[in-house]
Length: 274
Ligand SMILES: [Mn+2]
Image 1: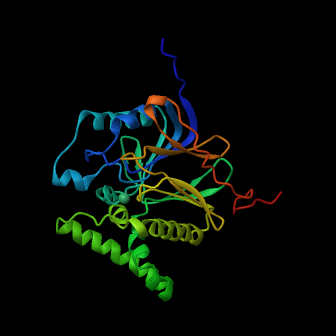
Image 2: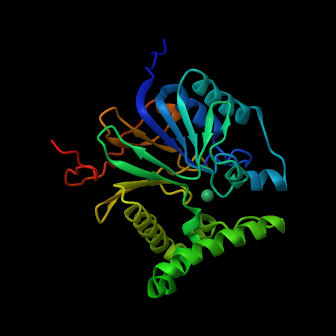
Image 3: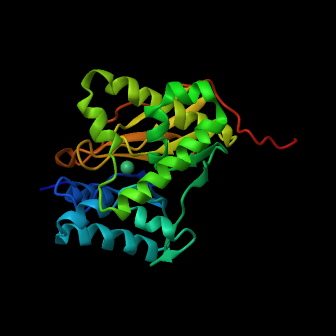
C-alpha cells in the first residue's frame, strides 16, 4: 500500500523558467511538485510560458493547461501569486499591476522574508548585455550600465518586431563550455550589484537555468533554476529560511541539497529602534 505523502506547507515558493509551450518543459514534474508543496505566496519568476516557442510552432498540451489550472486554483483558494515576466513571456510586461484570475503581474517585486530580510525578485534577462560587455561597462561606470540595459531592452523589442527570437543568454552560455562558468559568475555578480543598489539584502532571479544559493559579498544571490532540465524551486520556510529543492518525482520527496546559504547572521537593513 502506497504511503500517503503529506503536503509540505511553506510561506513562499519561487518558481521560474518552466517554458510551457516548449517540448522540453517538464510540466508533469511541476504538477507533481505542486501537489506536495503549497505556500501562502507564489512567485513566478519569469519564462513560465515560452511565447517565442509558441509563436514559431504551437505546442500546447493538456499538461500545460493543468499547470495553469493548478495555479489559478491556488489563487482562488487564497494564495497570493505574483508573476514577474521574463524575456520569453515578455508580452506580459505590457501589463504591470494587472490581475489575471487572481494573479498579479509585476516587473519586479521586493519580497520581505519572515526574518525581515528583503529580496529583490526579478527575472534577470536585462543583465545579459551587461554580462556580455562587462569589461566596457566596468570601465565606463554607472551611465554605461544603465545605457546598456536600455539598449538591450530596445534591441529585444526590435527583434520581437522583426520576428526574431530573443537572444538567449543561457543557450549561448552553454555553448561556451569553458567560459560558461565565468559568465554565470558575472551574471551573479551584476544581479547582486543591482540588489545592493536597491538597498536590499538579497536577490531572487531565474533566467540562466542555474539553481544556486550563494553569498555574493553580503548579498544573498538566489537563482530558482528551471523546469526544463533541473526541476528546482526555492521555498521560504515560516521562519524566513530559504531552501533550494531539487524535485525528483519518483522519490516523492525533496532530497536535501543543503545548499543553504552559510552567512554570518544578518540583521535586516531597516532596523527599528528598540
Ligand atoms: Mn529568461
